[in-house]
Image (cartoon, rainbow, N blue to C red; front, side, top):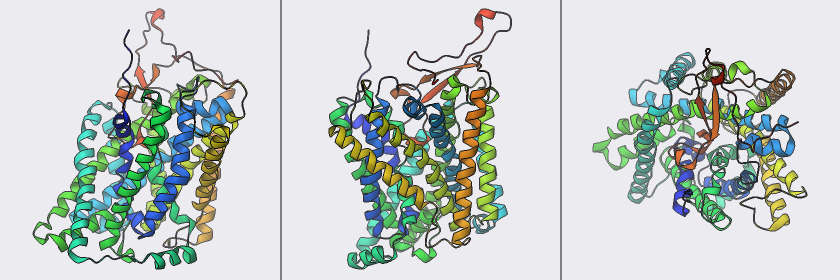
Length: 522
């Protein structure tokens, strides 16, 4: 019998390192100038580390090996809140698509010198729909071809342009010594204390989301109790350095007044080429097209993956049986179409109703963070609740510091998550699309309606008869199957496998398969 080979420190680091490459968020960081470094440090210390530590322990508890976030929360708080956690984890992807496709449209508009593509709301929304539904149609035939493309698009479309931005930024700084943001720390501190807006923290939290997808594989790491905390510290340091340099590179050449959130990176690259290597100014078009390729590959890998996380609720019969169906290519077509409808409606509201400008971009980021933070709040509540349990199940990893340290870490994470959720109801200082009161009411209404729909789905699902004749089986993905060039929040932990039913042979009737560790919540 052979045993799975454990990952070393570097192997596990690469499993999560894709979250360092977040070039589409650099313009949002650039808005804060030098204070971006402070914000990234705080987000990493008081939010990212608690999330990663608590998620890692929950993932390695006996009985939590299958089911991901749904099982972590369900086994402590019950199936209702487990469903809310996994449903919101999936739903945030639908809003996150909007900022990602805005990034594509902004780059295309810049390269093609077609301003209307980025400024005309109806034209922008039409382009949005063509991109999203085009990639969705492409995915219905399965993800095997996409995975090959993503490996290439990540390297030449995300990593390479990010490095070009950083290198050009360094050349520009060494050559001119001038930047478009305030470099005086005392003055920046005065700005922070006198004009601080809690809403500015939103993009920094978004940059760190998704670590729970990697925490599920901590049992594949050598000596996790020692190595995992070191992995996290290394990851936070790298993330702070890379994201700080990226944000400051954009801020160095693009004044805040001229900054467009979905075009900021390409604006900065264009300015840097013009000021450092004028003969290669045409290179900005090449970089722009490469960034489009990178983001197309990224979005393609997200369209199907996160939907699969909802299938773990099938054992409890929560989602309607009709939607828990896959085609011959292992694709959950019906849920994908529901996802597309949600994306289309929200994108219409943000693009056409709210103009699709910086304000709409900021609102999309806030909605994404709001939805995702509901999942994290439930993770922290579940973690704090299980600390008090007697005869606790065995686990591979424990948050350091005993019960006091565990409570402290989870409490810090819970409080910071609640604060960040509160911040999403406050528009940033640069938000001009609608009044602050209208913004607040819209955000509150959105959260209340989504939560009500989620609880209604759960209530109706648990009242209808359970069915087990699904045309697929499910398994937790092995670590060697994980595509490391996909951002963690876009990954999926479960693999679906279509099984054809035979009408002639009743013995071949497919029944729903779950591992013995999965238990129905009564």
